[in-house]
Image (cartoon, rainbow, N blue to C red; front, side, top):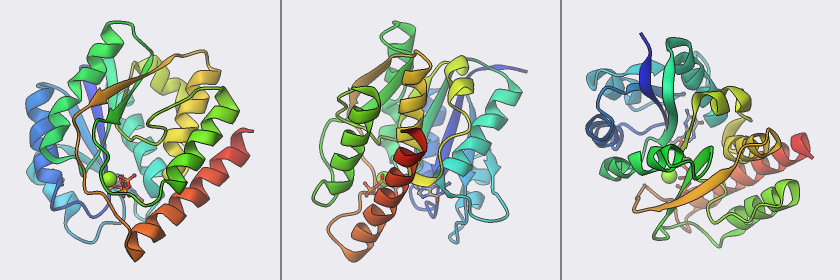
Length: 224
Ligand SMILES: Nc1nc2c(ncn2[C@@H]2O[C@H](COP(=O)(O)OP(=O)(O)OP(=O)(O)O)[C@@H](O)[C@H]2O)c(=O)[nH]1
Ligand SMILES: [Mg+2]
């Protein structure tokens, strides 16, 4: 049976925040099909998803954000999605309630791929990874984006088909943006009041952004 909206939630070690994210999604998108893309979590993330009565894909080996999201979106599309595929990071918590505004932007034909920009800047480092992502997208597409790596996105099912499989790891958002643009689809950014568990200027935060940068460089090399 096909659904109006299919939502893929990427989550690695998000047992703390996933329940509130899923509760907000259930309320904001009644009747939607939700798949959690768990991936090598060691903290009971999959159990938290099952308790919320949503589907979970847990690859036997960690495959990275892009690989896990690909499995989740393929599962959603196989079940049939009529109106929109939504991508959501597992750490949004209650602020995931804002995401229907992305689908509204699609319905109003403002774009084919709607991307959420955070209204307030939270955490982060010195903007190196973000700036690099912006330059990669500008050089490959000419687009000037406020939120080049935002994980909160909505697209019609045919757009999802065109951008699958996603690029590996943290390169998935850049890859999807470039692939959608090259397929002739229009991107629209929508400012939303979102929050997430941001990593800051800590060793863990810098390690995270180093991994992001490596993935951005890989996706740039694969698309240029
Ligand atoms: N399936 C899967 N999800 C991941 C992986 N790495 C991160 N995620 C999830 O993807 C989402 C985004 O990752 P974050 O680590 O929050 O990255 P970010 O928000 O871009 O970065 P910060 O702002 O620095 O926190 C979160 O919900 C993570 O749980 C992964 O390897 N596999
Ligand atoms: Mg985050």
